[in-house]
Image 1 (cartoon, one colour):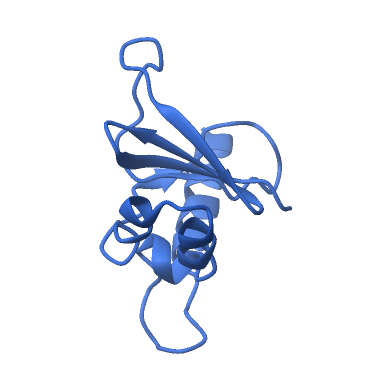
Image 2 (cartoon, rainbow, N blue to C red):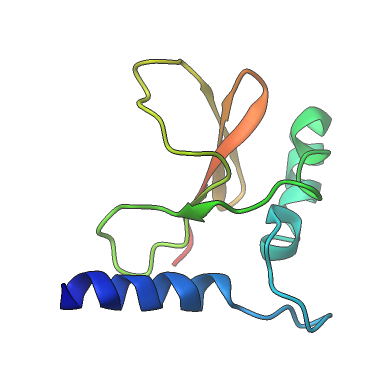
Length: 109
């Protein structure tokens, strides 16, 4: 129970990070990772880049790696149910299903 409470506090801290530009909660991928749009455009993926300004972060990665900054933009699903694509750009791997971003793996720690 204490571990669940500690995880909840960490999740709240993770998503309560304040933007340096505004006094608003960081909730969209574009706010959290401002360089990702440029990287996707450079990789020839404007279809993914245009999703970032309205795409909300839904939850943190559920792995056990300390300091993991990866996150879901859709509800987690079983990968074997629907096949997607991984788009590596810079320090990120963007997971998509049917052209929609569902998960962003942050490789830097």
